[in-house]
Image (cartoon, rainbow, N blue to C red; front, side, top):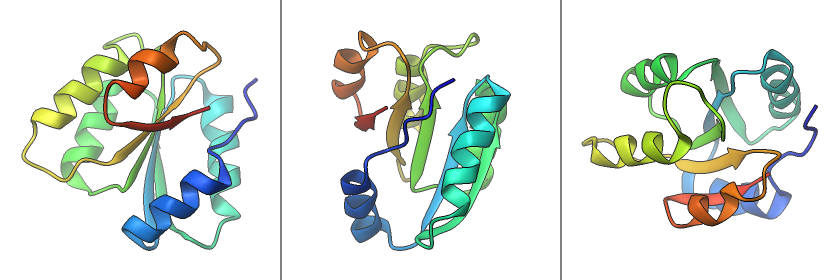
Length: 120
């Protein structure tokens, strides 16, 4: 189980950019989603958070709501995290700050070549 969370520094920078933040957690693992939700629930700078267990659900939620931060699992089965970020960039909407949530360090290089602000 991953227990890392985005660094305090990154969250503070994003808070300055966005004010109280809306966060979307996208992870196929229920334990990871609930762990991240528990951490977010303790923060007073998080306005709201939601979760999705697959890319299709995430895209639907991103179409309906504006999120400042996207916590994105790096190994989603329907679409790679890189392809999802590319898809989001093509939309005519505000791009959320993306933080990849992964236990696989080799994803970090590709992540930072995109709109990623951090990875854990």
